[in-house]
Amino acid sequence: MSADTNPDKMDLGELFRNLSKAVEQASPEDLLAESKAAGQNTEGIAAEVKNTLLDAVQSFEQRKLHAARAKYRIRSSAPRTRSFVMPATPAERLRMLADAATRDQRVAKITAKFRNLTEISDDDVRSALEDLMELGAFDDIAEQDNDGND
Amino acid sequence: MNEKARPLGNVEMVAGPDEVRGAIASLTDAESVKLKRLAEGAAFRLRRHVWGKDANDILQEAIHRVLESKRHWKPQKVDFIGFLAGVIASIEYDWRERGKRGETPVLETDLPASNTDGDPMPNALQRAVNGCPNPEEQLIESEEPTQEELFQQMEELFSEDSLASLIFSEWRRQTKGPEIMNALDLTRKEYDTAVRRMDRAIQKRWPEGMPHVR
Image (cartoon, rainbow over all chains, first blue to last red; front, side, top):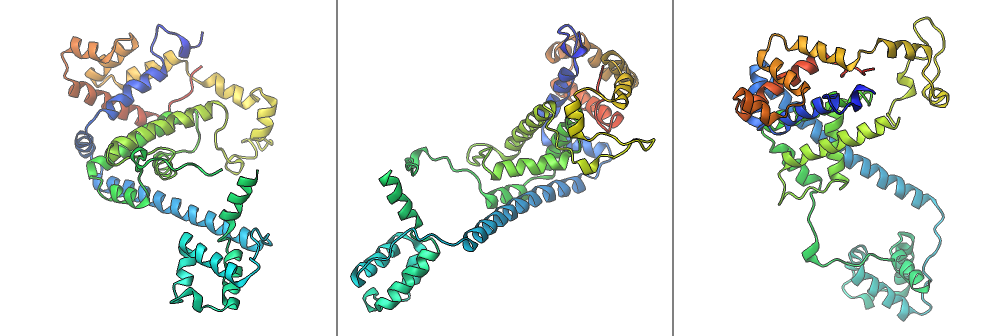
């Protein structure tokens, strides 16, 4: 029988548990005092720990940013499949833009520059809708429609 | 299908990067030292199973787990240091289990391509396929101490520290902490202080990690 599985004797796992428990249960102040007594540069240790943790936050954010950029690059380089059909009449196109503005902050920012949506020419409405389609502003609606059709 | 909105009353707010940054900034020196000590201990114990991970790797992984919401920190309920202590313990467990399954993250480029005589060494994949230790590994295994020999080395290590020596011999007899404190008339603080002294001595004696035993 290997020593690690002998139930009658302490094994290394139990030794480790005994040792680690004393650190887990210790107050931070006791550990600080012990480190100082051992001649350690506790301010240096604290600064290193904080830097390591803050670096980890930064690297996490950068990783997320890189992932978002990569996703955007893939999305923008792939030929877009038109997931939404341009409405047939000027009135329907205007209504589509107005509906989108109430639903999506990105669209609202674009339409906010017009005092009144009825002042926009149909060409501008059509152009805005095409840009928004390219940006995927209507993809969610198309997906919902597709889900509903399943 | 879209996820149904949950009622606000059931939503538990978890911390984002700014909140975590704030918590890190407000760590006291004592709390930082404790975190370091916890991470060092975990890294030391892991060296038997996982190669190349140090205390800083564990601290970084802990923060990533918090931010990836693999571990939900609810600042309104759990203090940061206590929460991170739990995450560090969880990382130690995960990595140890992965190490046991042979999922140790060892890069091939970090391993020597030949032995000291210049003979080509099989890579990790080839060794995994072979399944049996090569002659060099057999030699290393034969040089590993038995657990009894390792514990004797520890007794020698504590020979100058009578309290540590007593506690260690009681542990070997399977005596639990409270019984030892009772028998030796020790407070919890005196017992824990002696145990942490033993912990430090062991980590100093075996800086590369506790050796494997036969």
